[in-house]
Length: 279
Image 1 (cartoon, helix red, strand yellow):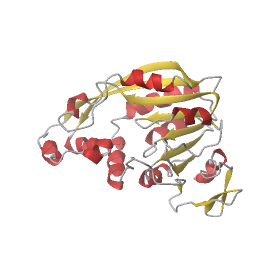
Image 2 (cartoon, helix red, strand yellow; image 1 turned 90 degrees about the vertical axis):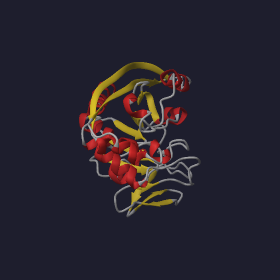
Image 3 (spheres, helix red, strand yellow; image 1 turned 180 degrees about the vertical axis):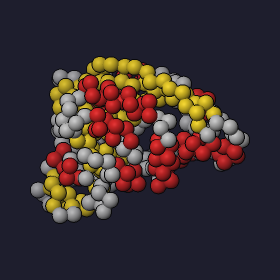
């Protein structure tokens, strides 16, 4: 619920501290934001430019696929790394948190911790708001998240956009940024056949360069795990991500052609960055 993490937030209009007042989140300047009956709050102040929020169908597809345990090796490793780099009572945020699947694993691993999940999609935030000790906020990472300065111990980003300057502002001195991004061979067996968006070459180096001004690299590892996906799971794999906005017109035919379970590789780069002392 929002009252779990309201002290970590700031008004997206004037940056003043906010607090829960009745069914709203309000700042001292009088700006007020209604808390949805599902428990999340929308802190967008304008329509995001060039961004596609996940639809209800996309969120449902992600929920089904993750519930099948196919990405559990990544979730387990994220939780293990987080427990090594954050205090037990950590203040954790995940930007672009989707259904809150990964954030839940991390919060469960850190007793006494609290979590903030942000996403551009209200449908996603409905799911996030169900996670214990977590508050959900509709917000745009690119525009700068409505979090107070130096309020967080750890920020997570899993297959989602990043805003290095904003992340550095929100982290306490020495706070960490934990990023999971697709490796070159992630889902390689089905990317072309299902018309999925490709992984850009040199993505890991591009990531490090984009963060260099604000963060130092502290740790890097690969997470590699085999999956076997049946046709319904393959369809959810396509529909849960950005490919859903640009999926091929013959996707149903491509899925139908896969009559047997298909081996697929989960391959992810996992990196820890430490906020630089001069930032």
